[in-house]
Image (tube, rainbow, N blue to C red):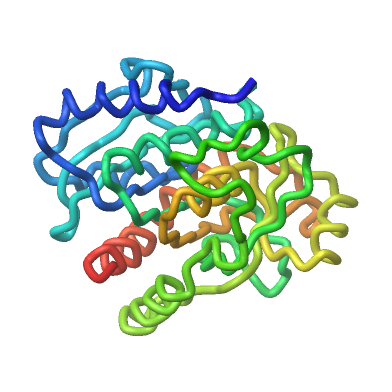
Amino acid sequence: MSVPFSDYQESAEFLRGRLNGFEPEILLILGSGLGFLGDHVERPIYVPYGEIPHFKTSSAPGHAGRFVFGALRGRRVAVMQGRMHCYEGYSMEEAGYAVRVLRLLGADKLILTNAAGAVNEDFAPGDLMLITDHIKLFGFGPLQGPNLDEFGVRFPDATKLYSPRLQALARDKAKALGLTLQEGVYMFFPGPQYETPAEIRAARALGADAVGMSTAPEAIVAGHCGYETLGVTLLANMAAGVLPKPLSGEEVIAMAEAAAPRFSLLLLNCLADM
């Protein structure tokens, strides 16, 4: 069942009441183990997801499940420490719900991050990857059902879901900082089980460089309602079958913690010039 526009309005009105006139311009969605960036926010206003009308909660490991509103590098930000996933039982529209709510609050730029498995064998665990595009082949997307004209058109173009301008900015910042920034296509899998080796071979044949269980729902919703989006992946492990060892969630969290300084450095420097 589609979410009515009135639910988005009620969520936004609740947040306006908590923010005392603060209006975010950039939304950051932080993936598994990457919520540390929210700890850098100046003059923070914390709002747990569970307090917001119609909002879903995040149960995934490494997700604090709250907003942090405030300033980062001089920009007014809304930081999501954790996101909603379809494998938690949410629809794709529910997984992208927060993106629309923050659009009603004035945000028009989005930074999407995630921890994912590397399909491209030229990449290594710990690498950062600029998302240039994504593949989503599973079921319907977050725009299924009656179109909400208040957000966008019925048939939105998806050619540039990931902003070429922001990609160029990330490349320039990485080069100036001496950071290695891989580039590639992210492929969405619903999870929560990790992909099979055969699925990874199929993903590679389709042109995917990394696989994960998030990001595509938010990116599609963001494109529909007019955000400019930057996507950056932490390659937390090699995907199934690339190395002769099983995958684990603990490995993902540990790699995210190890990559924290480089990840923060890149995103904070991008923020300043978005």
